[in-house]
Length: 414
Image (cartoon, rainbow, N blue to C red; front, side, top):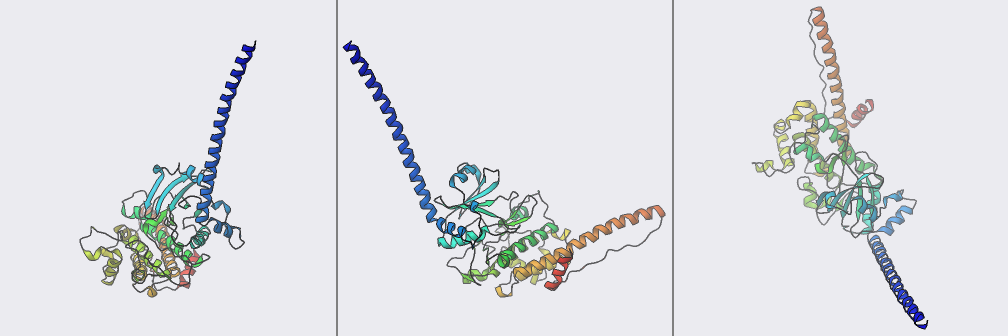
């Protein structure tokens, strides 16, 4: 009997020791998980503070800025949206970072941009707050940000149909680049830049206007975008930079030599886009034989000054547009490409002129359609009654020197 008790006690002790080991290991694992979670949270908090999260929260909670609190995404949300930033989700890469396509839990398709904050955090947060308040149908909407990652993340709405450069230069047949479409896109982009310069709560200078930054949505409407680091200028008239930023072929020569950026620098870049739309040529072409025609902006200006405009106009533009309207837009582009920035028009003037031309173009097309219908009826009458009659189309001309008030009157009539 004593031996039996002894064996039973030894077995119980062994079982207890085994259970104790299991409990100890479970406790050790839970402690490790808790410490790891704590380290991750501390790291997120560190990045959040370093990237200006506390300043952003302060701006959001103040009554001065009306910013929806849903603009702060968690790193977990964006990892899930991009499948942990899977390389198959990459839309593009550049000097500023990588762009990913993602889908949020509510099914919304978004673009997630990784980039490094350059300069003062306070400036970045101010720029982000202003960007998030932009409300224009022709500007890509900034949905929010994530500041708890080592590299800050910006979240934009996703625009499905690529960019203008692809449709102009890569022979994309999904949408025919007719004169009407080019004129509409030029009006939409001009209006977006005018909004940034003059309508937004503070003047915003884009600083990288180019055809690859003009996206096309599901209805092929233009959306001005910039998936690089924010480049909002929150100053009076000019901004002096230590390093010229922009894309070769679109950079304002005056800005290039003086490092002084103004709203007229955006006007110059838009002038290059207008020249692209008119000619169908790339802003820089290394395959062109003539050195003087490698730079589109200078070549375009030379052709106008030598009265050779229609030698470089895209044949699809010539086929679909009225000569007077094409000349009016070309003259506007010519003014935007002035070397002296003070001689360039404002984006307000550019927008009004383009809308005026487009208004005339719409009316002319409508009249021509009506005339075709009427002419068809007359032909039927001729065939029925056996008589002939002469019929001529009215001519509508556009004078480029029309005043802003006249153009506004035209817009009000539409």
